[in-house]
Amino acid sequence: MNVVTLSSGAGVASKKHFMQEAKEQGFEQFIKTISTTFYAIPVSWLLLVGLAHQSVSLTPFFLWIVIFYIYWVYAVIAFNRIKSEGPKLSKHFKEVCIILVLEGILWGAMFYVVMGYDIKTDTWAAIFFVGIISVILPTYITYPTGFQLVLLGTILSAPVSFLMLSNNSIMFTDKIIAILMYLVAIGFLIRPISAKVIEGIRLELVNTALNEELQKSLTALSHQANTDALTGKLNRRALNKALDDLVVKGERRRSTFSLLMIDIDFFKSINDTHGHDVGDKALQHVADRIVAQLREDDLCARYGGEEFVVLLPSASLDEARVVAERIRFAVEHSPLKLPHQPITLSIGVATYQPGMSADMLLKVADNEVYAAKQNGRNQVRFSSANRAGLIASK
Image (cartoon, rainbow, N blue to C red; front, side, top):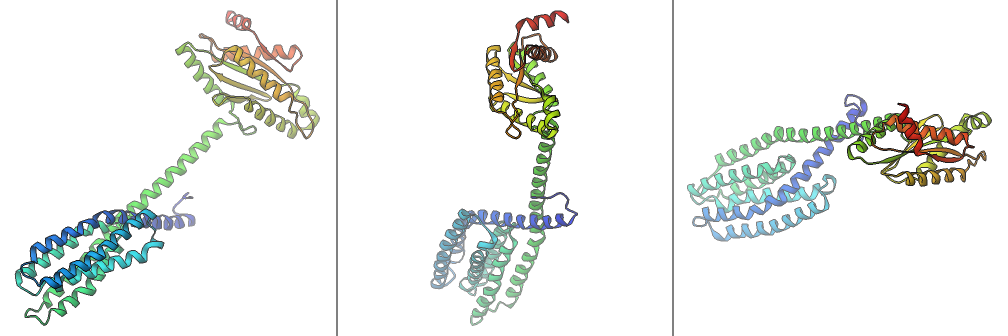
């Protein structure tokens, strides 16, 4: 996703995108929470039975619980299914809307089956209802629309419940007004709190996206800083670092590794005869053939001009000679197709021994390349005496 700047036109579109994604995450979190907390509803029925069973008419009371139980089973199954499918507002909004409105209607119907018998039971019923609303409120904090749907169902059914009680000896006009005012107030209360929660989710998404973009940019910059633009292999800067690391490791562990210095024979004549475009293709061709002969841990770098260096960690002199010969053979037998241009390599092999520096190792390999060219080119050269002479001259 592109979030280069939130102040630009693209940034505004991105802000809308992140807000929608935050709402989706809020809805997903709501489904995960309610699919768990919904199992607590039967506990509320037990509490209500304990409070009112001695005062109310049991037939409508238990009928209400049976209807609520049937609804509850459906809702639990639905929420778990939605959670397993992956909650999506566009896909599941209507079904969730119906479930939540029905829940509100059933809670509002509670007033009809519980109230109107005595003042004490009425008071406990009102306190119980307020407690239920307060307990379920946090469940809806990431999806306030859901809470408003529950309140809608309650506001639709609670007044009807009170009106149906008007034939009894007690009238509840003041209680209707108080409860409706409480519902409206709690509905407005959740909005600013939920808005801050959703905004927090949005900002977290933005930060995550920006961190991803930053990491991509840093990776790209690191790749550019360490890669030769023409061949796509390591450049000299990256080679020097890798070589220094191997020397430090070799010195610390008294271990060995090998290095190949590779020079394209008669490269200047390729440029002079066919032009620099063909010369560039020749460099790319050679680089690809070299890498094709290497192991996963081996490194190939363009050292400069028509020269390449290959690092062979843990490779002995004999192993390095085999790899060098394989590279020379592969390049010699795969000429450029357009134009048909044979290419050969002069390769010098140097093997690190404790006490050698990176420059000394490169010098040994370069001397062997020079010897290969003096001896007719298209060959691999190595010499243990070369190292001894170099150290003696220091």
